[in-house]
Amino acid sequence: MRAMTIPEPGGPEALVWAEVPDPRPGPGEVVVDVRATAVNRADLLQRQGHYPPPPGAPAYPGLECSGVVSAVGPDVTGWTEGQEVCALLAGGGYAERVAVPAGQLLPVPAGVDVVDAAALPEVACTVWSNVVKLAGLAKGETLLVHGGGSGIGTFAVQLGVALGATVVVTARAAKHERLRELGAAHTVDYREQDFVEEVRRVTDGRGADVILDIIGGAYLPRNVAALATGGRLVVIGMQGGRKGELDLGMLLAKRASVHATALRSRPLDEKAQIVRGVREQVWPLVEAGTVRPVVDRRLPLTDAAEAHRLVETNDHLGKVLLVR
Ligand SMILES: NC(=O)c1ccc[n+]([C@@H]2O[C@H](COP(=O)([O-])OP(=O)(O)OC[C@H]3O[C@@H](n4cnc5c(N)ncnc54)[C@H](OP(=O)(O)O)[C@@H]3O)[C@@H](O)[C@H]2O)c1
Image (cartoon, rainbow, N blue to C red; front, side, top):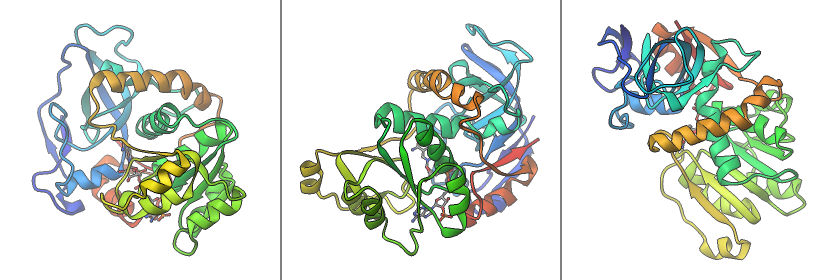
């Protein structure tokens, strides 16, 4: 088969479409014929040589895909050849075929096009496991989503609203209108406004109950300042660096908590548990049309370099899909 290889780390031109060995399904795995994959921020880091795939994962980028099951390995039940699926991957989505642990497969939700389904697994699993399972976002609470226009952000806004939360987002101004259409109650232009002041203003001084953060170090002191009493900050990205000052006095006075998680490196059984939870709790919302894939555009998989250039500018809103 062919896949998007990275012979030498570097800029977008480092991505090379090349002949590679065909994947074979090991015990507990299926092989998916890839119809589409999506660009995740992590793929850019992997291409630059900063985020190697975990042991055992395919060497090519691609943390999710959609397609058709083309082979089923031993010890797999519930999946058959010819079935349309989407999948959470540890890597290897930028390819014609990929072997996937069966626990990371999801059916294509009813009413969603098989190509658009590639936009869902990574964001659904990341947002649900952090905002719902870990932070326990409850109806009536306020959720602050940093980077509301990202793939992660556009999903988090919709899921937060579906759960009955008031959602506040940070994003550049050009993305605000679309984010309000997705259900954000308040939009903050982080380039012009102080998000701590804005969150306090719209919550009558209370602050955010849950913050989903992709900036990390640079936002840590202000995120803690923006938390409500009993608030939960979940850091899932470090676009603003890995180190920041943590005011423990403020944290304990608020009885608040700070968490940080990564999905890709979790053990298989934890990923399977998250995928099951997403299927039970999120898929019905997708099938009802309450939560939808937000697709900025589709590009051919062979144009992955172009897609990476686009994502590096942050001009996209939602997911950029790579289609075969
Ligand atoms: N830990 C995990 O398991 C996990 C899993 C998936 C993703 N992630 C992380 O989640 C983040 C989003 O991933 P993605 O693939 O959805 O990204 P993406 O679509 O490439 O979006 C990145 C976003 O960052 C925003 N941004 C940049 N600087 C900002 C700032 N100072 N304040 C607020 N927003 C800012 C940009 O929005 P503007 O145009 O508005 O600037 C852009 O929308 C990444 O950091 C990624 O590594 C983590």
